Image (cartoon, rainbow, N blue to C red; front, side, top):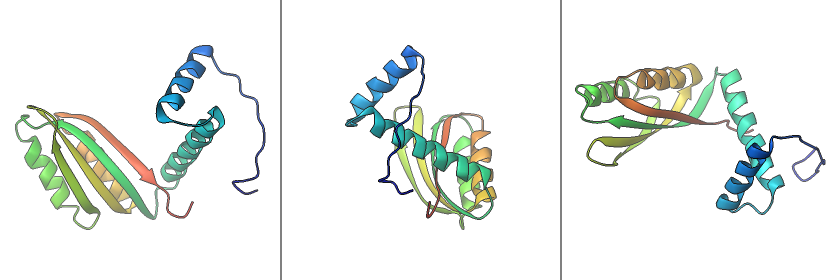
Length: 139
């Protein structure tokens, strides 16, 4: 079955969940609920496949928000990144305000190593938000 072969399904959802979903697809400019649902299912499958098969080469975009005034944190982040030179392919640093910075890190390498770097950064005191968005090559 190809992406163009469509099957109609029925889904039961709580009204509050459907209302919020409708708001989001309207905000994002989707032409229909179906388009939004297809996109959400693709994202879910991509994440599941990445997590369930962590072995092998993986690609990810790590976003980190942290308090740059937290003593020693910047040095710890830099140290982690310097020890992962073969996996970290690029990074972008943005000052959000007086206290907070955003770091965007592109990772490509062995899945366990990508996950390890993510976990190490997530565990640092002063890190407020970490999200790893993953890509499964050749889905």
